Image (tube, rainbow, N blue to C red; front, side, top):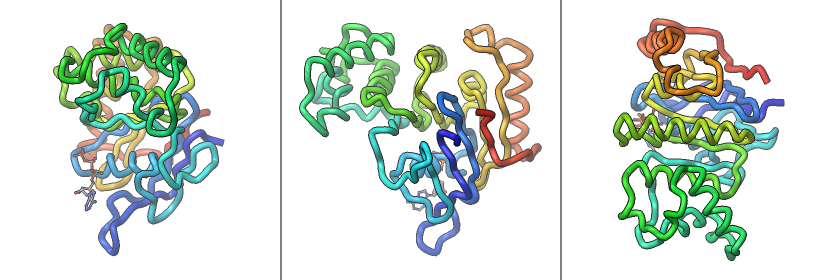
Length: 257
Ligand SMILES: Nc1ncnc2c1ncn2[C@@H]1O[C@H](COP(=O)(O)OP(=O)(O)OP(=O)(O)O)[C@@H](O)[C@H]1O
């Protein structure tokens, strides 16, 4: 049994054309998968289906063999914009998913402080979002998504608005978080190099369908030097060709696990 199993999933609005169509995809527990594709090809829609924010109009999406029918604490979502609440200090922004459901206690606060340290912002819990850089706000958004200990974490181009250096630092933070194991990640990006650096597997989407998938065989742990390796460039080139329509390959996307 795969951790995430997407079988023939599609989504259309009313009688309109399908926005995503015939998606078959398997994600093994603890794996990091990326989804790349041009603007408007349906990436966000697929992510929303996995989050239970939309329901498929055909096929099915299952997590741990249970159909996804609504948002749940098991699935965290990191959006393109950090969407922090300006009037709450950082620590309360991180605790928000818990405080919306129940009273938070000292143990929750300790956990939030730990998460802040994990995203390289130790001791900054009393600051307000307006006192943070864009990169720091993104880090807080990641900590907030982790506070419920989700089994699956979904990212919708979370670093798109950041400068290249900050982006690389956040990618390294994310790899460090993955190194802790446990959380399965599905990450949407326009950026091919970002996908290759982060992922165990990358799927390419075009016109609402998955048209190519590639296992990333770069060794882990990955550090900055990997970006200059010939294999890294070759993998980026293959994905670029697929995005240009130059390669169509084996589907469905079956995780080895
Ligand atoms: N609620 C909606 N009503 C009508 N059309 C929609 C709706 N949501 C998405 N679409 C259309 O579906 C297509 C896919 O949208 P989606 O946001 O999933 O693409 P995307 O690949 O994430 O794009 P981007 O990379 O620009 O964020 C787009 O053409 C979009 O206009």
